[in-house]
Length: 138
Image (cartoon, rainbow, N blue to C red; front, side):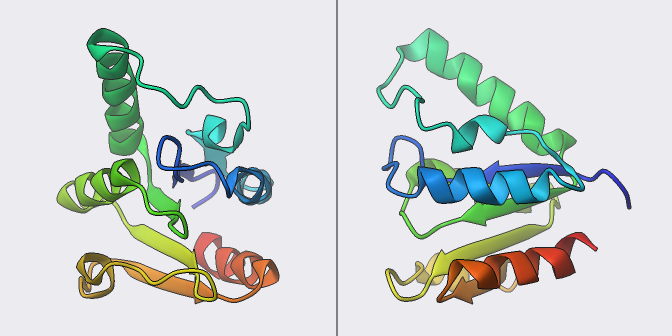
């Protein structure tokens, strides 16, 4: 399947420590496929609540992108309530999910690792991510 639509999930309000990594992963995916949420790699995102109306627009846009996507790829080293919600939403809509996390920095929740629906990809070096992405996106 050429030009897959990928929903990339990464922490925004939960912490931006991995924003540069998100950007590199998004850039890598975009060599062959479309990332609907490329803004997640932007280091200048507004991290504060925007008010109920603005946050509702974000929710509506993100869930529309999820429904449009062929696959969710999430980088989950930095815990995020939003990413957890996106994963559950994707699962409930039958969207394949691939979860990456740096095993040297964190452990995933048992709610993710215990769920056979999710494809879990622990890594120790960033290079490992790209090798796995090649297999997922082939």
